[in-house]
Amino acid sequence: MASTVVWRPIWRGRSCGSASRRCSPAFPGCGRLPGRRWAGGTISGCRCSLRCPSPGERNGPARDRRSYGSGGAGAVAWRVSFISTKSGQFRYFDVQLGHPDWSGRRVLDFGGNVGTFLEEAGGRIRPSDYWCVDVSRAAIEAGRRRRPQAHWVYYDRYNPQFNPGGVPGLRLPGLGTRFDYVLAYSVFTHTPDDEAVELVRALRPILTDDGLLAFTFIDPGWTPPGSGQVSNVRWRLDSRSGGAGPGRASVPGHPQAAIDRAVQAPWCAVVDRTLHFDPAAPVPPGERYDVLWSPDHVRSLFPAAEVRPPAVPERQHCCLLGPGD
Image 1 (tube, helix red, strand yellow):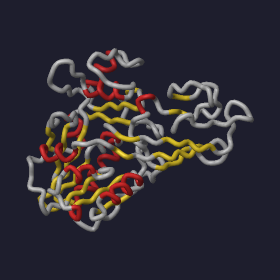
Image 2: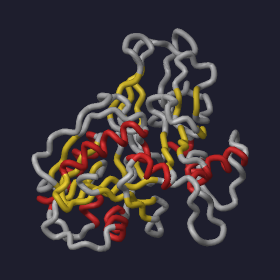
Image 3: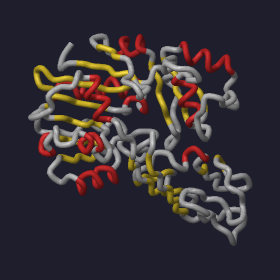
Image 4: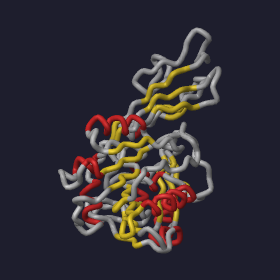
């Protein structure tokens, strides 16, 4: 997923290395001491233990303005903006929904960031029929500047990756209408299961009687057709390790046996660069967090779901649900 990242650590009162020196970024997001080599991870020899972004995160999703720490000496405030440059969302859902007539249909782009879906629709959806809800204030403001006729709603809900300073469990804001399509591209791929179920339950009642909720998920064992391709779980691990490629060696710290287990697992997650198998395990705020579901796991969460395979060149499956069971 292509995007723009801005990391700006702001230190509150703790010296680093010595009483006369404080952490200062060598580039936006790296709080290392001047002269230290940046390598990602916790800074060796720095008492503040700032976790810098890894090389793969330097061009990762841009993050919204959030604060970490408990305040006072040593607390860190991060100003981060999630502005996604991912494209192809309109084509993806247009294919998955069977190329519907979009004219006059009201669309909620849940987690739509800057509204790339609307831009790619090329006039097939009127801006006045388009709503975008996202946890990134910066993205919502950018979308509003581009298309002021559309409806832009900032949703300050906690998410460990995209909005770690948000409000846990914040209810979906009232939108004042019902929708023919509620679409969520790569939203529940960064959401714990219980929250995904809660949000789906909140979204389905705002569908019209014949409306559809469509959202994506990543099947850990799915591999695109063609030679040299890798499974989705390997793809996500590689993307967290500085890049992907058909000939990459096994991800350090993840023996092939663990990857093989993940391929067969109903649920797994890539947290930063670590493979997890326990859905109940806590996720530290600010970590990169990818959730992978098998189709059977999706059906266990949403028994009425229709599951469709990825629309090439995408790697994500699609789940379709109506307004009621």
